[in-house]
Structures are given as C-alpha cells and as structure tokens.
Length: 81
Length: 81
Length: 144
Length: 144
Image (cartoon, rainbow over all chains, first blue to last red; front, side, top):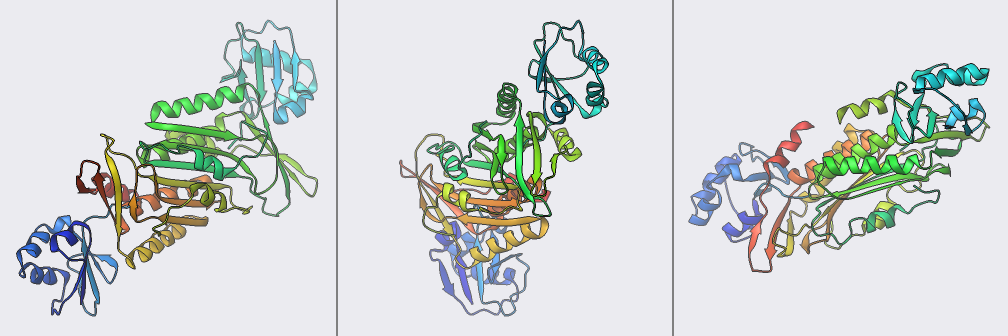
C-alpha cells in the first residue's frame, strides 16, 4: 500500500511517500501500526484531530475501511484558495 | 422649477423636460397640479405606486417637501445593472 | 458611467494590480442577454445624467463604509447595446473574501434598483418594451 | 491547476465571451497578501497531484448541480509565489446574478477547505511556517 504525506506531516515523518505491507482493516488500524514504528511517526500522529486522511485520493474519515485501497494520504487541514 | 421625465413617463408626457411655475409644497401637490393639466399627465400619473420621484437628484417619497427644490424627476422603478 | 464599451479583461487586470495588502478581488459583469426567442436586436439604456454620478458615488461610499475594502470600481454603460455586450461591472478588493463578496453583491443589488437607469428592449420583429423592475430585485435590498 | 502564472485579464475576458444566454459573470481572484510586517518573501503552495484534479472537478460539478450555471472556471497555482501574485481564480457565468454569486462563493468555500493545497510562508528574516486552517473557513461550509 502506498502511504503519502503532505505539508508538516511529510516533514515530521521525513519522507513524502513510502510503500508498506499491512493487514490494517481501517485507517485507524493503519495509524496504530505507523505510530508503533518510530518516534517520528508517533509524533506526527499524536493528535488525529489535527490531521485529515484521503483513501485513494478521496477525503474520508479515520474509521474508513481499507479493503482494496491502493493509496492512503495523511495531511493537515487544507489551506487552499 | 425644472420637471424631468424618464423612460415610459417621458414617453407618456411626450417630452423629457419642462419648466413650470408652481406653489406646490410637496411632491404630491405637484403631481395633483400636473394631473389637472391634460389627459396625458393624468395618464402618466394615474398609478403612483408605479412611479419613483427624485428631488434635486436624490430619490425621495411623494410626501417630500419642495421648499427650494430646483429639479423634480419622475420615472418608473429603475432597472440598472 | 460611459457610452463607450469597456474591456473586462483590461479592467479586471488593472483593478487592484500591484496591491500586496489585498488578498481577495471579486468582479461582477452584467451582459446583455438575448430574449428567449433570440430576437433581441438592441438593449437601450437610458439614464439620468447628473443623478447617476451621485447615486453611484453614494452606493460605492456606502459599501466602503460597511465593509473593509481596499478598492471599489463601478462601470455602467448607457446607450444602445447588442446581445453579448457588457452592460456594467463592479469590482471590489479586500483583505478577506467575505468582505469582497458581500460588498460586490451589495453594489449590484443597489445598482439594480437605486441607480437611475432604465432598459428598453428592441426586437428584430419591431417590438419595443421597457424592462419591468422585478419584485425580487426590490426584495434583495432587504437583506442589507 | 498549474505552476505557471495566469493572466486575470485574459481569463476574465475569454470566460463566457460571446455567450448571449448568460447575463451574469462573477470572478473571484486570490492574491498573495504580504504579512503585517511586510516581510513575506514567498508563499509556497504544496498540492497532492492526482487528488487535486479530482477534488476540483468534484467541487465544480457540485456547483453546476446546485445552481443554474452556463460555465465554470477554476484555476489554482502551486509552487513558489511572491506577494501581489495571483494564487487562484474562480469564475461563474449564469443567467441571473444570484446563481453566479452563490456558486462562486460555494466554490471558494470548498477550495479553501476541501481541495488538497497547503500554504507555507517564508519570510525575509528566514522564518518558515505552515499557514494554519481557520475555524471560520471550516464554519463557512456549514451554510451550503
């Protein structure tokens, strides 16, 4: 599964993108897996209310299922316009 | 006093502008005077709810006083923009 | 207020150009719309010289007093226009988009019903009629 | 969505040009605003390639479904911009001004909070910070 990061999430994790093998069934389970990896992940995911998530390039919630998902993105609230 | 007319009021009266001597103290009194003149005035002023009035180029009401007024304009509701 | 056509592109580009303190620019442009039958030959716009300038200035000043604006532009044509031609435009520039949008809508609502312009439509079939004011345009003023 | 600058004048002039069925054109343009101290060197705009196109298309389609629009345009830049440069624009054309205004405001409200762009400010004094999302921008979505 491709995991992509943007803005300060990307900076905290230290990379824009990575491929991981995971059995996580929901975004929340994926976040738990990532948090357990290293301090920088724990830090980046410490406050989920400050994060947004997209599964296969569609905004969704942290309890969204991951069946068949190819790409999950984590980023702060958007500031376009 | 200069009286000016616009749009279909101008067309019904048959002229864009005229000078009149009047002792009318309010717009309503002026309208009464004009109505009494000729059929085309009576027709143009038959329904005041379809008319708007400006005294010295400021929109106002039919009960507005005319002390010192130099120019009174009658016209239908505006359709700018 | 002018008889001559104006160039939306040039006006929009020049408006608030080079200002670094204004984050939001809104423009509204009114275009002569053909009638349902496609027979509109001309839209004639009559105005009240003298009062028009005063009314437009008053409307723009009122907007500047109600919202935090860096710049305001109002252009309104009179005379004979054909379908597709630009009748008028307003532009507002502000720090924030809410002010720019609200002020532009306010300007439009007042221009529609409080500036001394009257439209007449002439069709290719020889008909001529004054455009009637709409209740909804008068109602639009109530929100301000 | 583009890295290159765009020309507001040319875009505004070309948008809905020649259409005789649309009476109202609204544009909104976002400009890089300098900070209070006047020390903004660059506004960097990061985006999510792939998702950005989808999100902008979805927002524009939603607007077209909710209002009677003849045309919609959305341009959004990414990359490094300087104060006074144009970040983005939306344009809407409709028969009536209410549709054009509301759709433009809707597009802006959704672009602000639902399109995957993130702004970072770099100052001449060497500071760099991500622009925080505003509660009022999130609240703005509630009216639709």
